[in-house]
Image (cartoon, rainbow, N blue to C red; front, side, top):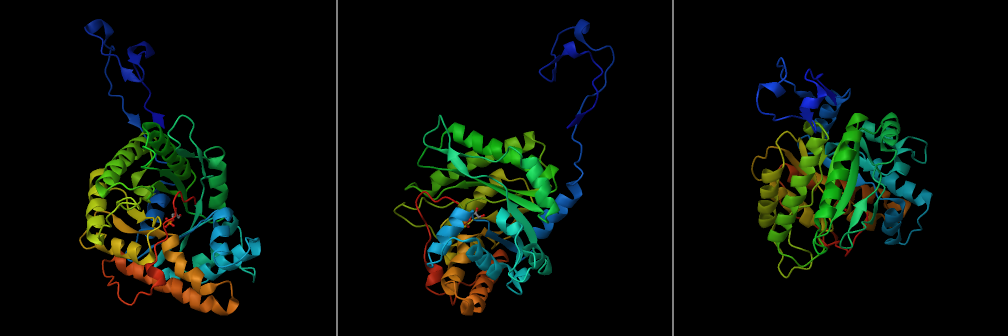
Length: 390
Ligand code: 13P
């Protein structure tokens, strides 16, 4: 940040603020209003355009940025080994789906996929460009225990982040994702919230400085038996702190995207909430905490079933919102696809059709026009897993 040069002697400034000295003797001899000037970064215009193009009507994000370990779990669920070739085959199936760009505007990739090609040698990034889908990249380095907290965690990855982002930009990425988590049953402690918010803000500033639109994702885990009111309370605390630190780090709000959890009761709560209730609580949170300068809210699915995640999104789009309210689902876009594929080449076409079905359903939900009819049983199965790691 550049600041206008101060004309008063440094002794008249205390901790960056003008001294409140009394009487003429401590006043500067002449006055000039001193305002901090935030220099627009070289990428500002591009960041705003990128964020806008991702947050475009009827579009959302396909999240396929599972780390190798998590992708291995997905593959294991259909009896496949966690090899580079199998990960490539799965990502190829997803990223070469013709017509995906009609519903999907961005795809979050894991580093391996950003640098990978199809088995015919076409870069995955180019497959996305053909569908006018913006390539994105997961840049956090995962969660580790947070010492001094109530068995909570913090997210690593700030060291070397600027140079990694610059390399990812060269490789074609235009947006980034950093996911940290907050656990309600573990408190959450003030320390864990502060750490999550500060880490997200530093990451967002660094990503923007290197041309990547940061997706800001403090996931409030579904774990717990608390009611929906408690989730709202925690979410308000978390987002208040996130925006406080985003502002302190001079992050351009028009050039970010958010990835919140929907406000729901804890997964082990005795009652389930309807899509209308979830929409009411979630929109209340957003209206109270998110400035309208932010172009897009791209929800995570967090263990909801495919159909639940779509119904909830649809309920949130029954009236006008100041932001684009959409999806950035991983589990809620991939579950039926995986089950359909089963690792067999002869099932690839059917699996791609299954992806289009989910992408279209969520596109309709973004427009508030999803009916929920004709959904199969697989798509209604919940995917909540206690203590899920990504
Ligand atoms: P889910 O939709 O599976 O919760 O994905 C979370 C995520 O962060 C993916 O990028």
